[in-house]
Amino acid sequence: DTGVSQDPRHKITKRGQNVTFRCDPISEHNRLYWYRQTLGQGPEFLTYFQNEAQLEKSRLLSDRFSAERPKGSFSTLEIQRTEQGDSAMYLCATDEGAEDNTFGSGTRLTVV
Amino acid sequence: AQSVTQLGSHVSVSEGALVLLRCNYSSSVPPYLFWYVQYPNQGLQLLLKYTSAATLVKGINGFEAEFKKSETSFHLTKPSAHMSDAAEYFCAVIPDSGTYKYIFGTGTRLKVLA
Picture 1 (spheres, one colour):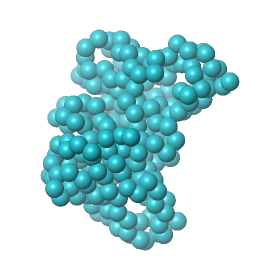
Picture 2 (cartoon, one colour; picture 1 turned 45 degrees about the vertical axis):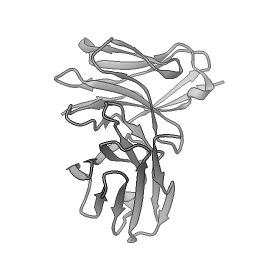
Picture 3 (cartoon, rainbow over the protein chains, first blue to last red; picture 1 turned 120 degrees about the vertical axis):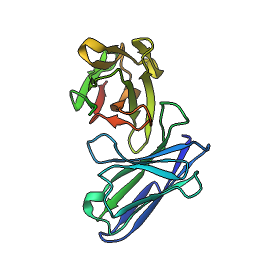
Picture 4 (cartoon, rainbow over the protein chains, first blue to last red; picture 1 turned 135 degrees about the vertical axis):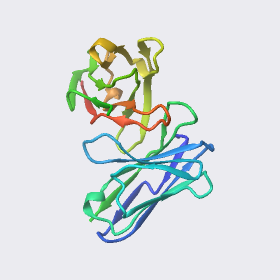
């Protein structure tokens, strides 16, 4: 088991529907990151939080994407009006105050 | 902007043979460099990291990597491949010391032949 739990593991949705993913770090780490990994590519940075503040958003994060970390512990990533191009693995990570990132197992999204 | 390049999207080796996965980085300052491994439908697991201490870094599962500033390289090696090493391997760099967000390479899928 990793120190980061992600739910659900898999999600299949119809184009145009909204989806929400959850990330739960086992320990309370200050910084939490979201990455997106498409088939055959490395993970790409989406956004990160320091406690409950969202401090940086990648230009990959379109207006249809929103992320929250309301109490500085768990985080949610919502995608509105999903498109087929949103199909990917969404990874959450925390850094435990050091340069190592601990990754969750990811949520695999398939938009049909 | 910092980036990493992994040469070879697929590498095949025989069981017991040397594993060599290549990573080159572009950076104007000494970076933090990492190798992560990903098994199917799993997250990423840290193999090893370079943080400007020893240039030869030893990691888990018998892997090691050598930081060569003159070549801007951080290649991953293992003397003898095992079937369980079959996975995808990612090289990554931290571009900003203020946070620990990563820039990843495109990955190398390692296949181990019996």
